[in-house]
Length: 150
Image 1: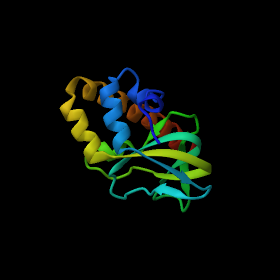
Image 2 (image 1 turned 90 degrees about the horizontal axis):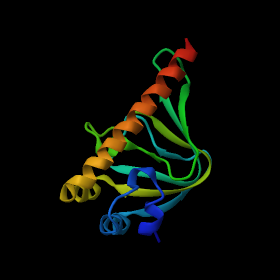
Image 3 (image 1 turned 180 degrees about the horizontal axis):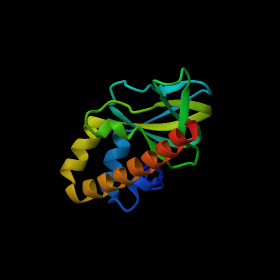
Image 4 (image 1 turned 60 degrees about the vertical axis):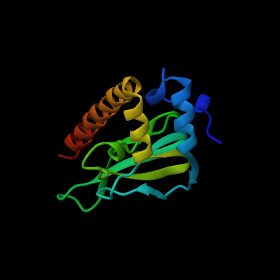
């Protein structure tokens, strides 16, 4: 069972009211994934947010100039989030997420989550600010990884 206390450990949710964390925990689901399993693939419709409890997830992108995908980032520390495309239009994953080791995750469906943020605009603003920080970080990582391939 996912508790508000567990959610409060994630940077995305730090400082949010307990009542909102309780509502988010009610729509969240804990799942396990095995090494080599894909959580989502680049280009697929994005309709969830993902949060790492334990394990390691490699974020990979395909380049038209190479046959293999390149790893642009790892989500390997507990309480990190990934799959932000679920709440950012046009809602398609910009990378593939593959388990680098057996992992435990929390998955939150995007539409109910966005409705909770809309109903709590002050908290929603904080969450979306944090999402932009994640996007900026991933963009920096992707740029560095792409430069190394040249």
